[in-house]
Length: 318
Ligand code: HEM
Ligand SMILES: CC(C)=CCC/C(C)=C/CC/C(C)=C/COP(=O)(O)OP(=O)(O)O
Image 1 (spheres, rainbow, N blue to C red):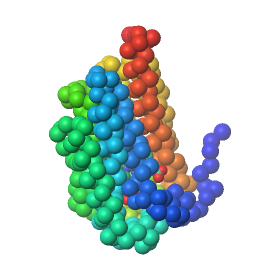
Image 2 (cartoon, rainbow, N blue to C red):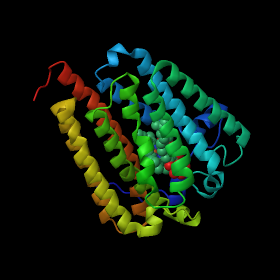
Image 3 (cartoon, protein in one colour):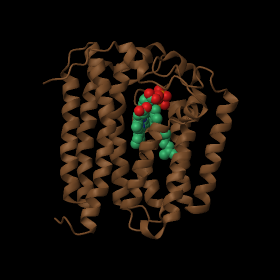
Image 4 (cartoon, helix red, strand yellow):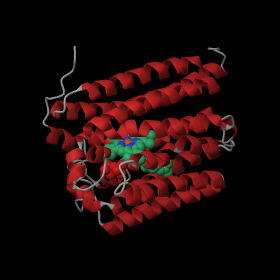
């Protein structure tokens, strides 16, 4: 039976999925540092580490790498909200964020960003290596400054180039344990890079009115709903294609099967989104696809670890 997506008014759904309505400093600090997003970034970093040959010899580097991703990723989230409180105030999805509605002051936000970033630099400088430190700071600057300040307000392809920052954690994890850059972590960076537009544009579709009102040139605003849905399908195909590559690089056949099935599932969701008539039901379905994209990436990265273990233990061979 097909699920219905027109049960909840769009405005309600948009606000419901936005930042928490308050409820304590800890909750506000988590919202300010985009902790839920950062948790998946850290997970992709963990997988980068577990696939790296040297992980068992460098536990300190491994832990420091993860702490660095969490702290520097969180700092990126705070910097992003420090730069655009006005935009956050205008969008239904973001207007209840702590900086946007004044629950946390600008000074408090700056202090928090500074503490997170300083802690990241110290932890990475002491327990990892200069390459890992540079990649991680590149992530913070790429997202917090380059994406937020330059790409987001100026080009509908903001998310494509901004996505490089969010794609770095698997490589950061790999280098944090002391391994030199290799094909596997680069393919994982490519995987998250290609997944990112297929992840974000469905959400941009259902928030397109807000983006238009705020004069942010997101793809659905500048190129319309049709073109955006086509691009989501294109990027879902590209993600499916690149997601198969790790199977040949050490993640094994079990991973390959999971990647093929999960990629086909996500592609089918995007194809259904593409075929739907423009309506509130389409907007709600787009939000469903956005949420599914997060499960899709989680499944891929979890399968990478399981598949890799089956290869290492000789449980599954080609
Ligand atoms: C420049 C690249 C990216 C953009 C523009 C983007 C955009 C977004 C947006 C707008 C949201 C909704 C946030 C909210 O309502 O508070 C979101 C949520 C999320 N994103 Fe992304 N994203 C990007 C990259 C990533 C990456 C690389 C990951 C993880 C590897 C990720 C994981 C998540 C998760 C887990 C959520 C759900 C958060 C929640 O449940 O509140 N995103 N993303
Ligand atoms: C150190 C390191 C690896 C940093 C990673 C960078 C990072 C936190 C990437 C996540 C990107 C993200 C949450 C984008 C939200 O877009 P948006 O800011 O346009 O969304 P909004 O409208 O919800 O604010």
